[in-house]
Length: 116
Length: 116
DNA sequence: CACTTGTACAACGAGACAGTGGTAGAGTTG
DNA sequence: CAACTCTACCACTGTCTCGTTGTACAAGTG
Image (cartoon, rainbow over all chains, first blue to last red; front, side, top):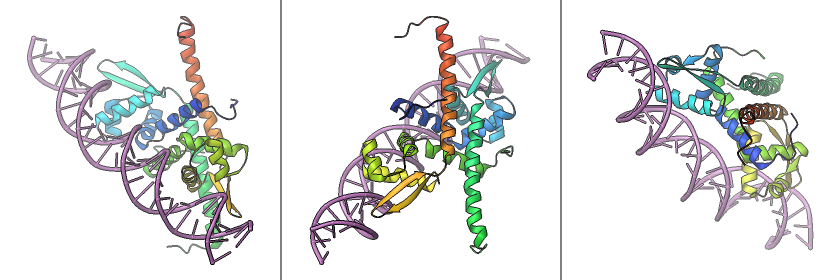
């Protein structure tokens, strides 16, 4: 994956939009559940304790971004992960977070557990 | 990097926030330039043709997120990449984008090269 | 000590986005 | 065909964020 330098403006917009799509707590939780098993709107609504409209809307965003797939099943619609790379991305982010926490921990650990 | 399943709510918020920080065109361009060389606010302001206040604000966001570092240099402040993982993340996103484009291309390519 | 340069902070208006209520369409059941 | 279930779309509202303007602070320069 070679990246042109500097990154052209349209690509920057695409990347930013992509990050925005994933950068929502509700959508992250939806993806997390879909990773376990493809689900319908109703199932996710129950699992996340959210409104049907809200779940449907977020799934629509994820679907339009090509991250999840839709399959009609009689009267219901089953959603499934289509772009597995989002989880790799998530884990990289978690790695960055963990690294920061570790550094912070090292700084504080060397001194004391005073604060609080 | 093992991920607890389901991802606890506070972690979900953290991840989402992280994505939001990166999910801004201006900040992506700042990171792109900082990748070439650590720079001051003034240099980035010139390079990106943006206002000093705007550049400073976005750099502040990136710094608070621990993605860039600050170093005073006399009257100026030099910013540098601190968390290199953002580029790996970016390239994963680009990979996902490319894959989608390829799939779309395959679908259209099988038919015709009509559009444009 | 004034002046210039470089940076950060606060406040404001504009725009985008998330969540909710209402509603319409598709499919199943009696 | 009528009633019910499941889902998607539309409009509205509150909230957040971006970019700009104005200003304050620090450091070097005459």
